[in-house]
Image 1 (cartoon, helix red, strand yellow):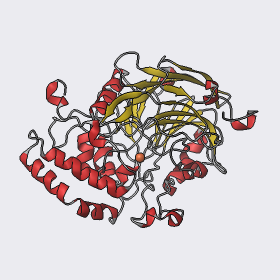
Image 2 (spheres, rainbow, N blue to C red):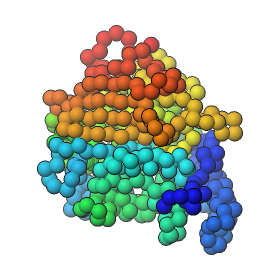
Image 3 (cartoon, helix red, strand yellow):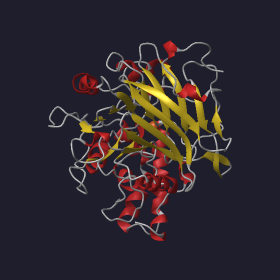
Image 4 (cartoon, rainbow, N blue to C red):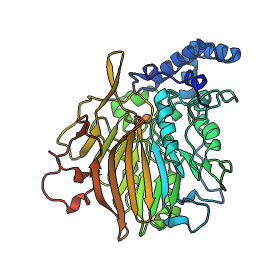
Length: 452
Ligand SMILES: [Fe+2]
């Protein structure tokens, strides 16, 4: 789809401004959005009526989803392929030495014009693989998944915002907003349309589970599901002291099936390879809370520092090496700026070893109803043998590379080679005085103060 006929279906960022983290707030916002749709004359009559009714019965929807059962958690126990796929540019088994292109964006599933721009710019990279880091707004039910990710809300191609496909594989992680609809649309509507392709131009085979692995001779990418356990028991989840009880407050812990799978299928593959993790939720943050359980669950299974990309917070941020007690060591990269209004001018928590912020994007893209919002964006990864180059882009059509970093696998572990800022705009804030801190060796080898 292109041209003016498609742009009229894009949502305005204003419709998604000032979103709160509570579940009930998202159900109300979803109902409001439905009523906006009701006013859209281009939608079929039956859709308009349904949307209007939906907007009136958000309480029932809330009760249905929040007190309903989660979708059963699919794993690979009955699958022939155990969720480990080649990270390769072509379909021959020996393609590991070629350039492999991977695109990542988080919190992209909004249906906004900005999400559409991100998708189109990703397509320009001609990725072999694309991975959405999760969150389809406001409540990831089947209508929303179809509208914001699949481009075919009613079986007709008149919606333009479609998650870009990789020539080899297309994937999506699970986020908390998908779980506001108990994961049913994520598992049953979205994932069957994604996954690996068997051959050039053939249809995707379906993404079998919310976790998977891509590997070649030098690299392993492990995609995790932190969304499935992100939503707790209604009402009780808001109570501070009850939040700490497992599964009551939603701790984003990895389901046991993932731990079993990593232990049996993935951990034996890590020797000699650089490890990259993908998840929806953040392992550390200089702006909001953090989710430490997955990093602790992986301790003992992943025994070397990793690069960890996540979303959830609507911003781009780069962290130095961090590790929680009893957890793995990670270089965090927040990519939650794919399609939502991007938070800027937010208070940063300074002097904390828990969140070694190195650089973040605080540039103003525009003002919406008096609120400044930042630039949406994404990351393109280029794997060339042992070397990985990561470019962080925004939605400007030209000169849109903000930051470039290069990593290498040496003696079976990640080594940061270079990192540099590509834009003269001072709004891209270098928080730590030494940019190399973003790619330097593990904490135990460092001396001196960690942060300014
Ligand atoms: Fe999220």
